[in-house]
Image 1: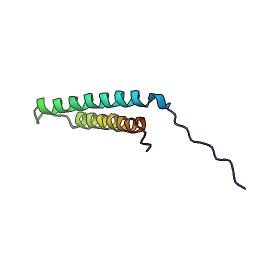
Image 2 (image 1 turned 180 degrees about the vertical axis):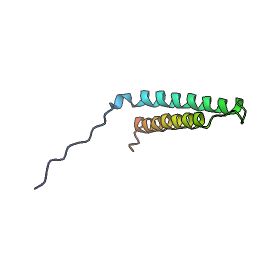
Image 3 (image 1 turned 120 degrees about the vertical axis):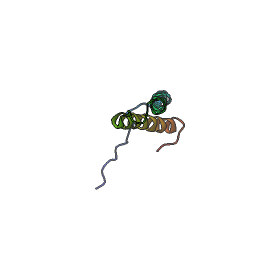
Image 4 (image 1 turned 90 degrees about the vertical axis):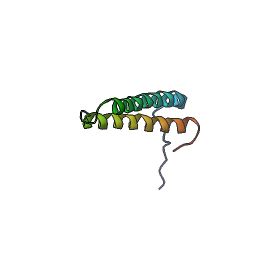
Length: 78
């Protein structure tokens, strides 16, 4: 027999979507700016690959989740 289907709810309230979008995008852009400043000011012989990868990864995560919440805030449900 057919079982009852449970609705799926978001762990984050819809009221928080715009706030989270702006916060995460702002943090991501600040980290991205820090990355570009680091690349422009440090000589290529003294750069750290670990720092570049970690900074780039953090910026990607924050910008990715910020974009997700921005899409959710304007009603594009992905």
